[in-house]
Image (cartoon, rainbow, N blue to C red):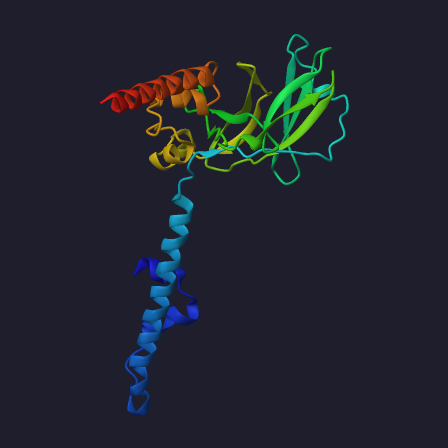
Length: 258
């Protein structure tokens, strides 16, 4: 009753103080009460929907950055933060709140970087409540060989990619992690907001990413290294995959001999 009184307009709530009309107006009272009840129910369900939306958790998602082919490379002073690194990564938020990722070849040699469907192999990380860097995205590999190709970046040339930003009730620091030639490169840190549920990989997301590895009998710990772009993650994955293939081959040859 308190909730309804708060959300009902004054013109409606004043009916609560009506006394029973006399004469022919008495027939309108049930109708007025029914309309009031319908309005109360509508406001109640609207309140429930708004509370549900506010408390809705955001699952961890796979990164879907996209190369900006219209970007013209230029010398960015922001990425001159570590001359010893072969690859420099600088991020900033654009006017529409997306992250702009600038990746610079900081060497005298041409850089060959692997792309997947116009995406750099990169994910977002954030500091959790304990101040530890944890992934809030995972990498989802394409199973079609045509999705992969090499992008050649000339010395000291910068390319740009766009990646989505998130919102939530947890304010923290964000960075991007790149995996290239079995080595991790990290961007600068930037303030942002996420949902705490993004630090958790749900069973639904495991199926989407293939983390269970049931098809190839890959250990879950190995799949975690693989989709979170850890060093040796791809190598460990292929080792276990090859062992599975060899075991299947021996099992097949044994069945033929019988």
